[in-house]
Amino acid sequence: MPFRTIIEPFRIHSVEAIDFPTAEQREAALRRAGYNLFNLQADEVIVDLLTDSGTGAMSSRQWAGMMMGDESYAGSRSFYRFRGAVAELTGFAEVIPTHQGRAAERILFEVAVHRGDVVPNNTHFDTTRANVEHQGGEARDLLCPEGHDPALLAPFKGNVDIAALERTIEEVGRERVPLVMVTVTNNSGGGQPVSMANLRAVRAVCDRHGIPLFLDACRFAENAWFVKTREEGYAEWTPGEIAREMFSLADGCTMSAKKDGLANIGGFLAMNDAKLAAACRNLLILTEGFPTYGGLAGYDLEAIAQGLHEVVDPLYLQYRIRSTAYLAEKVEAAGIPLVRPAGGHAVYLDAKALLRHLAPDQYPAQSLAVELYREGGVRGVEIGSVMFGRPGAGPGGTELPAEMELVRLAIPRRTYTQSHIDFVAEVVLAVAARASSLPGYRIVEQAPWLRHFTARFEPLA
Ligand code: F0G
Image 1 (tube, rainbow, N blue to C red):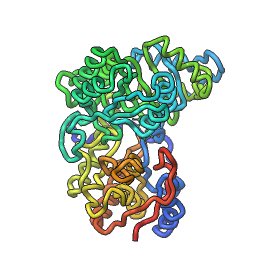
Image 2: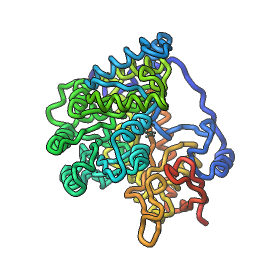
Image 3: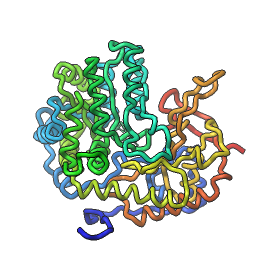
Image 4: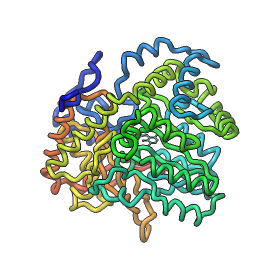
Protein backbone atom coordinates (compact mmCIF):
# COMPACT_ATOMS: atom_id res chain seq x y z
CA MET A 1 0.00 0.00 0.00
CA PRO A 2 1.32 3.49 -0.85
CA PHE A 3 0.74 4.92 2.67
CA ARG A 4 3.52 5.86 5.08
CA THR A 5 1.70 5.01 8.31
CA ILE A 6 1.91 1.39 9.34
CA ILE A 7 -1.29 0.72 11.23
CA GLU A 8 -2.10 -1.97 13.77
CA PRO A 9 -3.27 -4.90 11.61
CA PHE A 10 -6.22 -5.56 13.94
CA ARG A 11 -9.20 -3.88 15.54
CA ILE A 12 -9.68 -3.88 19.31
CA HIS A 13 -12.39 -6.24 20.45
CA SER A 14 -12.24 -6.05 24.21
CA VAL A 15 -10.64 -3.39 26.40
CA GLU A 16 -9.22 -3.27 29.90
CA ALA A 17 -9.45 -0.08 31.98
CA ILE A 18 -6.26 1.48 33.34
CA ASP A 19 -6.11 2.99 36.84
CA PHE A 20 -4.36 6.31 37.19
CA PRO A 21 -2.61 6.42 40.59
CA THR A 22 -1.71 9.93 41.72
CA ALA A 23 1.86 11.08 42.31
CA GLU A 24 1.35 10.59 46.08
CA GLN A 25 -0.01 7.10 45.56
CA ARG A 26 2.95 6.22 43.36
CA GLU A 27 5.38 7.53 45.96
CA ALA A 28 3.68 5.45 48.68
CA ALA A 29 3.69 2.40 46.41
CA LEU A 30 7.43 2.79 45.78
CA ARG A 31 8.16 2.95 49.50
CA ARG A 32 5.98 -0.06 50.23
CA ALA A 33 7.63 -1.98 47.35
CA GLY A 34 11.14 -1.34 48.66
CA TYR A 35 11.81 0.50 45.38
CA ASN A 36 11.53 -2.80 43.51
CA LEU A 37 9.04 -2.47 40.65
CA PHE A 38 8.35 -6.22 40.76
CA ASN A 39 6.72 -5.58 44.16
CA LEU A 40 4.15 -3.11 42.80
CA GLN A 41 0.55 -4.11 42.32
CA ALA A 42 -0.17 -3.96 38.60
CA ASP A 43 -3.09 -1.60 39.28
CA GLU A 44 -0.54 0.90 40.56
CA VAL A 45 1.03 1.04 37.09
CA ILE A 46 -0.24 3.22 34.24
CA VAL A 47 1.68 1.79 31.28
CA ASP A 48 3.22 -1.57 32.11
CA LEU A 49 6.38 -2.28 30.12
CA LEU A 50 7.85 -4.63 32.72
CA THR A 51 7.80 -7.47 30.24
CA ASP A 52 6.47 -8.65 26.91
CA SER A 53 6.07 -12.09 28.46
CA GLY A 54 2.53 -13.38 28.75
CA THR A 55 1.21 -9.82 28.66
CA GLY A 56 0.02 -9.67 25.04
CA ALA A 57 -3.55 -9.59 23.79
CA MET A 58 -4.87 -12.79 22.26
CA SER A 59 -6.84 -12.77 19.04
CA SER A 60 -10.49 -13.66 18.62
CA ARG A 61 -9.33 -16.85 16.89
CA GLN A 62 -7.21 -17.77 19.90
CA TRP A 63 -10.14 -17.20 22.27
CA ALA A 64 -12.36 -19.20 19.96
CA GLY A 65 -9.75 -21.95 19.90
CA MET A 66 -9.78 -22.06 23.68
CA MET A 67 -13.42 -23.12 23.60
CA MET A 68 -12.27 -26.12 21.59
CA GLY A 69 -9.78 -27.13 24.29
CA ASP A 70 -9.80 -30.84 25.07
CA GLU A 71 -9.02 -31.29 28.74
CA SER A 72 -8.34 -35.03 28.57
CA TYR A 73 -5.48 -35.99 30.85
CA ALA A 74 -3.81 -38.19 28.25
CA GLY A 75 -3.83 -37.91 24.49
CA SER A 76 -5.85 -34.70 24.33
CA ARG A 77 -6.86 -33.54 20.85
CA SER A 78 -5.45 -30.11 21.75
CA PHE A 79 -2.03 -31.68 22.31
CA TYR A 80 -2.00 -33.11 18.79
CA ARG A 81 -2.99 -29.75 17.37
CA PHE A 82 -0.24 -28.09 19.43
CA ARG A 83 2.32 -30.70 18.44
CA GLY A 84 1.36 -30.31 14.80
CA ALA A 85 1.81 -26.53 14.95
CA VAL A 86 5.21 -26.79 16.65
CA ALA A 87 6.41 -29.54 14.31
CA GLU A 88 5.29 -27.62 11.24
CA LEU A 89 7.04 -24.48 12.44
CA THR A 90 10.27 -26.03 13.74
CA GLY A 91 10.60 -29.36 11.99
CA PHE A 92 11.57 -30.99 15.31
CA ALA A 93 10.33 -34.54 15.79
CA GLU A 94 9.94 -34.50 19.57
CA VAL A 95 7.65 -31.87 21.10
CA ILE A 96 7.28 -31.56 24.88
CA PRO A 97 4.85 -28.96 26.27
CA THR A 98 5.90 -27.11 29.44
CA HIS A 99 4.18 -24.47 31.55
CA GLN A 100 6.70 -21.84 30.44
CA GLY A 101 10.18 -21.39 29.03
CA ARG A 102 12.14 -21.87 32.23
CA ALA A 103 10.53 -25.26 32.81
CA ALA A 104 11.88 -26.35 29.41
CA GLU A 105 15.30 -25.00 30.42
CA ARG A 106 15.24 -26.72 33.80
CA ILE A 107 14.37 -30.08 32.27
CA LEU A 108 16.86 -29.86 29.39
CA PHE A 109 19.72 -28.75 31.64
CA GLU A 110 18.93 -31.29 34.35
CA VAL A 111 19.34 -34.03 31.74
CA ALA A 112 22.22 -32.56 29.74
CA VAL A 113 24.34 -30.34 32.05
CA HIS A 114 26.62 -31.68 34.79
CA ARG A 115 28.82 -30.08 37.43
CA GLY A 116 31.79 -28.37 35.79
CA ASP A 117 30.20 -28.17 32.34
CA VAL A 118 30.25 -24.95 30.35
CA VAL A 119 27.24 -23.81 28.30
CA PRO A 120 28.06 -21.13 25.71
CA ASN A 121 25.33 -18.75 24.53
CA ASN A 122 25.32 -15.32 22.90
CA THR A 123 23.83 -13.98 26.15
CA HIS A 124 22.00 -16.15 28.67
CA PHE A 125 18.70 -14.80 29.86
CA ASP A 126 18.50 -14.63 33.67
CA THR A 127 16.47 -17.84 34.13
CA THR A 128 18.64 -19.65 31.58
CA ARG A 129 21.80 -18.65 33.41
CA ALA A 130 20.28 -19.56 36.78
CA ASN A 131 19.18 -22.98 35.50
CA VAL A 132 22.66 -23.75 34.10
CA GLU A 133 24.25 -22.64 37.38
CA HIS A 134 21.70 -24.61 39.39
CA GLN A 135 23.13 -27.77 37.73
CA GLY A 136 26.65 -26.73 38.74
CA GLY A 137 27.46 -25.61 35.20
CA GLU A 138 28.94 -22.36 33.99
CA ALA A 139 26.81 -20.16 31.73
CA ARG A 140 29.27 -18.42 29.44
CA ASP A 141 28.22 -15.44 27.32
CA LEU A 142 30.08 -15.19 24.00
CA LEU A 143 28.48 -12.18 22.35
CA CYS A 144 30.09 -10.62 19.27
CA PRO A 145 32.08 -7.40 19.89
CA GLU A 146 29.41 -5.15 18.27
CA GLY A 147 26.90 -6.39 20.83
CA HIS A 148 28.94 -4.88 23.65
CA ASP A 149 28.66 -1.31 22.37
CA PRO A 150 25.14 0.01 23.05
CA ALA A 151 25.41 3.03 20.75
CA LEU A 152 26.96 1.24 17.76
CA LEU A 153 24.60 0.69 14.83
CA ALA A 154 24.92 -2.80 13.37
CA PRO A 155 22.29 -5.14 11.92
CA PHE A 156 22.99 -8.31 13.96
CA LYS A 157 24.31 -7.34 17.35
CA GLY A 158 22.99 -10.59 18.81
CA ASN A 159 25.52 -12.69 16.90
CA VAL A 160 27.77 -15.18 18.66
CA ASP A 161 31.50 -14.48 18.68
CA ILE A 162 32.54 -17.50 16.61
CA ALA A 163 36.26 -17.26 17.44
CA ALA A 164 35.42 -17.11 21.16
CA LEU A 165 33.17 -20.15 20.78
CA GLU A 166 36.03 -22.10 19.16
CA ARG A 167 38.41 -20.97 21.90
CA THR A 168 35.99 -21.94 24.64
CA ILE A 169 35.50 -25.44 23.29
CA GLU A 170 39.24 -25.92 22.87
CA GLU A 171 39.99 -24.55 26.32
CA VAL A 172 37.40 -26.49 28.33
CA GLY A 173 37.31 -29.58 26.10
CA ARG A 174 34.44 -30.89 24.01
CA GLU A 175 33.32 -33.31 26.74
CA ARG A 176 32.61 -30.43 29.12
CA VAL A 177 30.43 -28.57 26.60
CA PRO A 178 27.14 -30.53 26.61
CA LEU A 179 25.40 -28.12 24.25
CA VAL A 180 25.63 -24.67 22.70
CA MET A 181 22.68 -22.30 23.03
CA VAL A 182 21.84 -19.29 20.86
CA THR A 183 19.16 -16.85 22.04
CA VAL A 184 17.03 -15.38 19.24
CA THR A 185 16.57 -12.47 19.62
CA ASN A 186 19.15 -11.75 22.29
CA ASN A 187 16.96 -10.41 25.08
CA SER A 188 19.63 -9.60 27.68
CA GLY A 189 21.76 -7.93 25.00
CA GLY A 190 19.15 -5.43 23.83
CA GLY A 191 16.72 -7.65 21.92
CA GLN A 192 19.18 -7.77 19.04
CA PRO A 193 18.85 -10.37 16.27
CA VAL A 194 21.17 -13.17 15.18
CA SER A 195 21.87 -13.53 11.46
CA MET A 196 21.41 -16.76 9.52
CA ALA A 197 25.07 -16.54 8.51
CA ASN A 198 26.07 -16.47 12.16
CA LEU A 199 23.76 -19.36 13.04
CA ARG A 200 25.31 -21.34 10.19
CA ALA A 201 28.79 -20.57 11.51
CA VAL A 202 27.77 -21.72 15.02
CA ARG A 203 26.32 -24.88 13.46
CA ALA A 204 29.61 -25.56 11.65
CA VAL A 205 31.58 -25.24 14.91
CA CYS A 206 29.11 -27.54 16.68
CA ASP A 207 29.35 -30.08 13.85
CA ARG A 208 33.12 -30.06 13.95
CA HIS A 209 33.07 -30.93 17.65
CA GLY A 210 29.93 -33.06 17.68
CA ILE A 211 28.09 -30.73 20.09
CA PRO A 212 24.31 -30.24 19.89
CA LEU A 213 22.96 -26.76 19.20
CA PHE A 214 19.79 -25.53 20.90
CA LEU A 215 17.97 -22.28 20.22
CA ASP A 216 16.42 -20.26 23.01
CA ALA A 217 13.62 -19.48 20.60
CA CYS A 218 11.35 -17.18 22.66
CA ARG A 219 11.41 -14.43 20.02
CA PHE A 220 12.12 -16.47 16.89
CA ALA A 221 9.53 -14.63 14.77
CA GLU A 222 10.93 -11.20 15.56
CA ASN A 223 14.38 -12.56 14.72
CA ALA A 224 13.01 -13.90 11.43
CA TRP A 225 11.63 -10.46 10.55
CA PHE A 226 15.04 -8.85 11.14
CA VAL A 227 16.64 -11.49 8.91
CA LYS A 228 14.08 -10.78 6.20
CA THR A 229 14.64 -7.03 6.32
CA ARG A 230 18.39 -6.89 7.07
CA GLU A 231 20.17 -9.97 5.73
CA GLU A 232 21.02 -10.32 2.10
CA GLY A 233 19.11 -13.02 0.27
CA TYR A 234 16.06 -13.23 2.54
CA ALA A 235 13.88 -10.33 1.36
CA GLU A 236 11.63 -12.63 -0.66
CA TRP A 237 11.28 -15.28 2.05
CA THR A 238 8.24 -15.39 4.34
CA PRO A 239 8.93 -15.10 8.08
CA GLY A 240 7.66 -18.67 8.44
CA GLU A 241 10.18 -19.93 5.88
CA ILE A 242 13.00 -18.08 7.61
CA ALA A 243 11.94 -19.46 11.00
CA ARG A 244 11.89 -22.98 9.59
CA GLU A 245 15.39 -22.47 8.18
CA MET A 246 16.60 -21.15 11.56
CA PHE A 247 15.23 -24.18 13.40
CA SER A 248 16.66 -26.54 10.76
CA LEU A 249 20.15 -25.39 11.81
CA ALA A 250 19.55 -26.49 15.41
CA ASP A 251 19.07 -29.84 17.15
CA GLY A 252 16.38 -28.52 19.41
CA CYS A 253 14.97 -25.50 21.19
CA THR A 254 13.52 -24.20 24.40
CA MET A 255 10.58 -21.88 23.96
CA SER A 256 8.45 -19.58 26.05
CA ALA A 257 5.10 -19.31 24.28
CA LYS A 258 4.48 -16.20 26.40
CA LYS A 259 6.53 -14.28 23.84
CA ASP A 260 6.27 -15.28 20.20
CA GLY A 261 3.65 -17.92 21.01
CA LEU A 262 1.27 -14.95 21.50
CA ALA A 263 -0.15 -16.74 24.53
CA ASN A 264 -0.47 -15.75 28.17
CA ILE A 265 1.18 -18.92 29.45
CA GLY A 266 3.03 -21.94 28.08
CA GLY A 267 6.18 -23.12 26.43
CA PHE A 268 7.84 -26.14 25.00
CA LEU A 269 11.00 -28.12 24.62
CA ALA A 270 11.54 -29.61 21.16
CA MET A 271 14.34 -31.66 19.66
CA ASN A 272 15.25 -34.39 17.21
CA ASP A 273 17.07 -36.76 19.58
CA ALA A 274 14.48 -39.34 20.69
CA LYS A 275 16.65 -40.68 23.53
CA LEU A 276 17.22 -37.24 25.01
CA ALA A 277 13.51 -36.51 24.63
CA ALA A 278 12.60 -39.68 26.53
CA ALA A 279 14.82 -38.61 29.45
CA CYS A 280 13.25 -35.14 29.37
CA ARG A 281 9.73 -36.60 29.39
CA ASN A 282 10.54 -38.60 32.51
CA LEU A 283 11.47 -35.39 34.31
CA LEU A 284 8.43 -33.65 32.87
CA ILE A 285 6.16 -36.21 34.49
CA LEU A 286 7.88 -35.66 37.82
CA THR A 287 7.01 -31.96 38.09
CA GLU A 288 5.02 -30.68 35.11
CA GLY A 289 2.54 -33.37 34.22
CA PHE A 290 1.80 -36.01 31.63
CA PRO A 291 3.68 -35.50 28.33
CA THR A 292 0.52 -34.56 26.40
CA TYR A 293 -0.20 -31.51 28.56
CA GLY A 294 3.03 -30.63 30.41
CA GLY A 295 1.48 -28.37 33.03
CA LEU A 296 -0.90 -26.65 30.62
CA ALA A 297 -4.64 -26.81 30.16
CA GLY A 298 -5.92 -28.14 26.85
CA TYR A 299 -7.15 -24.63 26.07
CA ASP A 300 -3.66 -23.22 26.56
CA LEU A 301 -2.33 -25.69 23.98
CA GLU A 302 -5.02 -24.45 21.55
CA ALA A 303 -4.11 -20.79 22.16
CA ILE A 304 -0.43 -21.51 21.51
CA ALA A 305 -1.09 -23.54 18.35
CA GLN A 306 -3.07 -20.62 16.93
CA GLY A 307 -0.57 -18.03 18.24
CA LEU A 308 2.35 -19.73 16.48
CA HIS A 309 0.40 -19.43 13.27
CA GLU A 310 -0.44 -15.72 13.73
CA VAL A 311 3.00 -14.63 14.86
CA VAL A 312 4.66 -15.29 11.50
CA ASP A 313 2.11 -13.13 9.65
CA PRO A 314 4.20 -10.47 7.83
CA LEU A 315 1.61 -7.75 8.56
CA TYR A 316 1.80 -8.50 12.27
CA LEU A 317 5.61 -8.56 12.31
CA GLN A 318 5.92 -5.37 10.28
CA TYR A 319 3.64 -3.58 12.76
CA ARG A 320 5.37 -5.17 15.75
CA ILE A 321 8.93 -4.23 14.81
CA ARG A 322 7.89 -0.79 13.57
CA SER A 323 6.06 0.08 16.80
CA THR A 324 9.14 -0.71 18.88
CA ALA A 325 11.36 1.34 16.55
CA TYR A 326 8.85 4.22 16.85
CA LEU A 327 9.49 4.56 20.59
CA ALA A 328 13.25 4.26 20.06
CA GLU A 329 13.20 7.05 17.46
CA LYS A 330 11.45 9.43 19.85
CA VAL A 331 13.95 8.69 22.61
CA GLU A 332 16.92 8.94 20.29
CA ALA A 333 15.72 12.19 18.73
CA ALA A 334 15.89 13.72 22.21
CA GLY A 335 19.53 12.67 22.51
CA ILE A 336 18.87 10.07 25.21
CA PRO A 337 21.37 7.19 25.11
CA LEU A 338 19.88 3.81 24.26
CA VAL A 339 20.81 0.49 22.71
CA ARG A 340 20.83 1.00 18.94
CA PRO A 341 19.19 -0.10 16.77
CA ALA A 342 15.90 -0.76 18.58
CA GLY A 343 15.36 -4.36 19.66
CA GLY A 344 12.42 -6.39 18.48
CA HIS A 345 10.36 -6.46 21.65
CA ALA A 346 11.81 -3.62 23.65
CA VAL A 347 13.69 -0.36 23.84
CA TYR A 348 16.68 -0.42 26.17
CA LEU A 349 17.73 2.87 27.77
CA ASP A 350 21.43 3.13 28.56
CA ALA A 351 21.51 4.20 32.20
CA LYS A 352 25.31 4.00 32.41
CA ALA A 353 25.56 6.74 29.79
CA LEU A 354 22.60 8.75 31.07
CA LEU A 355 23.36 8.65 34.83
CA ARG A 356 27.11 9.13 34.64
CA HIS A 357 27.24 10.40 38.22
CA LEU A 358 26.33 6.93 39.60
CA ALA A 359 28.75 4.01 40.00
CA PRO A 360 27.53 0.48 39.11
CA ASP A 361 27.14 -0.39 42.80
CA GLN A 362 24.74 2.55 43.10
CA TYR A 363 22.56 0.79 40.51
CA PRO A 364 21.98 3.55 37.92
CA ALA A 365 19.49 1.48 35.89
CA GLN A 366 17.45 0.74 39.02
CA SER A 367 17.41 4.46 39.75
CA LEU A 368 16.21 5.27 36.23
CA ALA A 369 13.53 2.57 36.33
CA VAL A 370 12.21 3.83 39.68
CA GLU A 371 12.09 7.37 38.34
CA LEU A 372 10.08 6.44 35.23
CA TYR A 373 7.48 4.99 37.55
CA ARG A 374 7.57 7.95 39.91
CA GLU A 375 7.23 10.41 37.01
CA GLY A 376 4.50 8.80 34.96
CA GLY A 377 3.57 5.38 36.30
CA VAL A 378 5.59 3.68 33.56
CA ARG A 379 7.05 0.35 34.71
CA GLY A 380 10.16 -0.94 32.95
CA VAL A 381 12.75 -3.36 34.25
CA GLU A 382 16.38 -3.04 35.29
CA ILE A 383 18.75 -5.18 33.22
CA GLY A 384 22.02 -4.27 34.83
CA SER A 385 23.96 -4.92 38.00
CA VAL A 386 20.88 -5.71 40.08
CA MET A 387 19.99 -8.51 37.69
CA PHE A 388 23.47 -9.66 36.67
CA GLY A 389 25.90 -8.23 39.26
CA ARG A 390 27.76 -10.93 41.20
CA PRO A 391 28.10 -10.24 44.92
CA GLY A 392 31.55 -11.12 46.22
CA ALA A 393 33.00 -11.91 42.78
CA GLY A 394 34.77 -8.57 42.30
CA PRO A 395 38.25 -7.53 43.55
CA GLY A 396 38.53 -7.74 47.35
CA GLY A 397 35.15 -9.43 47.72
CA THR A 398 33.24 -6.53 46.20
CA GLU A 399 30.34 -6.97 43.82
CA LEU A 400 31.28 -7.62 40.20
CA PRO A 401 29.07 -5.29 38.15
CA ALA A 402 27.19 -6.24 35.00
CA GLU A 403 28.67 -5.11 31.74
CA MET A 404 25.73 -2.89 30.84
CA GLU A 405 23.28 -0.88 32.93
CA LEU A 406 20.04 -0.91 30.95
CA VAL A 407 16.39 -0.16 31.58
CA ARG A 408 14.25 -2.26 29.31
CA LEU A 409 10.89 -0.94 28.19
CA ALA A 410 9.32 -4.12 26.82
CA ILE A 411 6.26 -3.74 24.66
CA PRO A 412 3.47 -6.27 25.23
CA ARG A 413 2.19 -7.66 21.93
CA ARG A 414 -0.96 -6.09 20.44
CA THR A 415 -1.75 -4.36 23.73
CA TYR A 416 -0.86 -0.65 23.66
CA THR A 417 -1.66 1.91 20.99
CA GLN A 418 0.50 4.63 19.50
CA SER A 419 -0.76 7.23 22.00
CA HIS A 420 0.28 5.03 24.92
CA ILE A 421 3.74 4.95 23.39
CA ASP A 422 3.73 8.73 22.83
CA PHE A 423 2.94 9.08 26.53
CA VAL A 424 5.82 6.75 27.47
CA ALA A 425 8.22 8.81 25.35
CA GLU A 426 7.04 11.98 27.13
CA VAL A 427 7.76 10.39 30.51
CA VAL A 428 11.22 9.20 29.41
CA LEU A 429 12.09 12.68 28.15
CA ALA A 430 10.94 14.33 31.37
CA VAL A 431 13.04 11.99 33.52
CA ALA A 432 16.08 12.26 31.23
CA ALA A 433 15.95 16.05 31.59
CA ARG A 434 16.77 15.70 35.30
CA ALA A 435 18.92 12.57 35.06
CA SER A 436 21.92 14.12 36.79
CA SER A 437 19.93 14.64 39.98
CA LEU A 438 18.65 11.06 40.34
CA PRO A 439 19.81 9.23 43.49
CA GLY A 440 21.72 5.97 43.66
CA TYR A 441 20.32 2.97 45.51
CA ARG A 442 21.61 0.33 47.87
CA ILE A 443 20.25 -3.17 48.36
CA VAL A 444 18.95 -3.83 51.87
CA GLU A 445 17.61 -7.35 51.30
CA GLN A 446 18.39 -9.97 48.62
CA ALA A 447 17.93 -13.64 47.71
CA PRO A 448 20.86 -15.96 46.83
CA TRP A 449 19.82 -16.19 43.17
CA LEU A 450 17.57 -14.22 40.81
CA ARG A 451 17.71 -11.49 43.44
CA HIS A 452 16.18 -8.82 41.20
CA PHE A 453 12.71 -10.31 41.64
CA THR A 454 12.58 -9.83 45.41
CA ALA A 455 15.39 -7.49 46.52
CA ARG A 456 14.51 -4.39 48.52
CA PHE A 457 16.30 -1.07 48.06
CA GLU A 458 16.86 2.26 49.74
CA PRO A 459 17.76 5.50 47.98
CA LEU A 460 21.18 6.85 48.92
CA ALA A 461 21.16 10.23 50.61
N1 F0G B 1 14.71 -17.09 27.50
C1 F0G B 1 14.55 -15.80 27.18
C2 F0G B 1 15.40 -15.18 26.13
C3 F0G B 1 13.58 -15.04 27.85
O1 F0G B 1 13.43 -13.76 27.53
C4 F0G B 1 12.78 -15.66 28.84
C5 F0G B 1 11.77 -14.91 29.57
C6 F0G B 1 12.97 -17.02 29.11
C7 F0G B 1 13.95 -17.70 28.42
C8 F0G B 1 12.15 -17.75 30.15
O2 F0G B 1 10.84 -17.91 29.75
O3 F0G B 1 9.51 -16.60 31.40
O4 F0G B 1 8.46 -18.37 30.02
O5 F0G B 1 10.00 -18.98 31.84
N2 F0G B 1 11.75 -13.66 29.56
C9 F0G B 1 10.79 -12.79 30.22
C10 F0G B 1 11.24 -11.38 30.08
C11 F0G B 1 10.44 -13.17 31.62
O6 F0G B 1 10.68 -10.50 30.74
O7 F0G B 1 12.14 -11.11 29.27
P1 F0G B 1 9.64 -17.95 30.80
